[in-house]
Length: 202
Image (cartoon, rainbow, N blue to C red; front, top):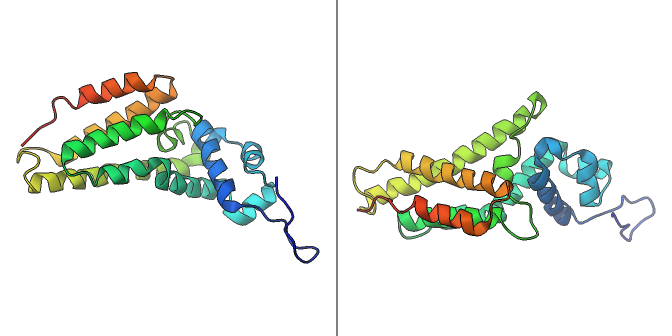
């Protein structure tokens, strides 16, 4: 809960905004955007609705901040994967990172960015569009990495970077959905490994 900081009488109660945002990430990750009620969010964050609005803005703005935090934290494996020395290494790291992130013990299963607005109504259109852009941006980053691999001779000249990027990201999103459905880490990793057995090599 919020704790009163020392200072003049009447000073607003303070709280650890960073820790509160981390807890909001977990709520959105588990329940999605619409499934996360304000009461659930503020209870998990340990703050009042007034404090939430004052610090983070409305629910959609809070979700945007939570998605940024998720991308920098649990979702950071994507950026690291793109730094791998070969396209196959990158693809392997993306799928392995997805499996690990979506099946972490004591964390929500699945991916915040995939499940966040799957059932969003018209009122959640902004969040649905935000997440579509988030997923497309990730695919674009993978595409650019694979295009560089073609230019460097790591992938054969006839390889299609856009198709390969869509293939890998679609697999990653599918893994996330399967993880949210309760499929175990080992089974998902076997599927990821099988998907890369016919990877085009130079």
